[in-house]
Image (cartoon, rainbow, N blue to C red; front, side, top):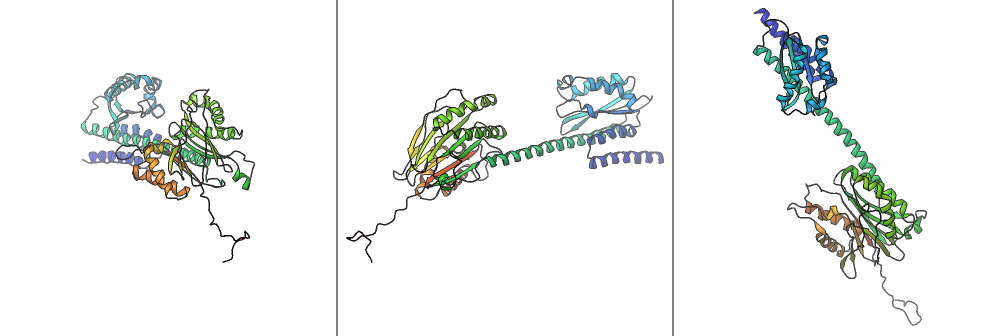
Length: 445
């Protein structure tokens, strides 16, 4: 009885020590090194091997563990030399176990070999072996349970390590996305410029941290300052790189640099798009992506808006005097679709109180609870209604985004990047006429 009690205490201490390592380990390799040693002592066997697997089913060669090393060296060498394709081509736990058992048994020779699978959440993480050359060594129910208990602890450790590795990868990706989103946010205008006679408001709401929408305000004569700059022509741009996330954001950044350099040429909008299309052709072709882009320039002295469109959503223009909404459109192909493309050009003189809305398809293609899209007709109605109320550009922008949010639902995420830019010409201040006397001077009251 005393010897049995001592054996039970020894076994309990061995299992407890392994459980303690499982709770406190920071290095999976150190934990796996201990497993064969604990198993061989717990099972009173001559030796033990642990064959762990990666999540993709390949052998984890760096973590093959065995006790004693000299007895198991040939088995470890042959396993390490086996091609991954043989193992990964097998289907199911039983096939993988049979493949491993055959190789381990062949290299260990005449021994009594017992094995169990290392599992966690129904996924195979490896195989645990114990062997003995002693005659009469028995495979009792107690030993089977002990081996399975160690295998289960090992499975938990491998699963936990895999989850920690995935967590670290996600954290690194989150940091990279945060950096990318910060850089992209810095590339978009942090505030709207001051242009004489104009109110501007703009917002980009990416569906992901990094998006493919792009808007910009670019001075055509950046060397000017103060009042001269306010009265100079400005380029107003709205674009959308096909796709979402980091790839679209990177292409948007590339396109921004090209366009800003092209604006300095002072060419008309159609020529700007022609040159941009040729410059971006090679990069866009390699990425298998295209860009829609509306490019315009506005002269505050003449109130002339010139524009060209590379298959982007036509902006909307509310005419105050006529109280109607028009579309600003011109023919043109996607940027990057073909090297030689022609673009039309349109012109429109804006009157005081007129409002232009530039937007991306993330607005009109946003879906509501019923699956219906927000669509251009609904946007036009909302735009027309808020323009008639006489509020400023920022209030118009806030109203349109609030209307979009109500349609999509407060707890639902947009499926695509949504951007809008509002340009409103300030209303003319009409001074009341004063009565004049016969001398042509104001009459005294």
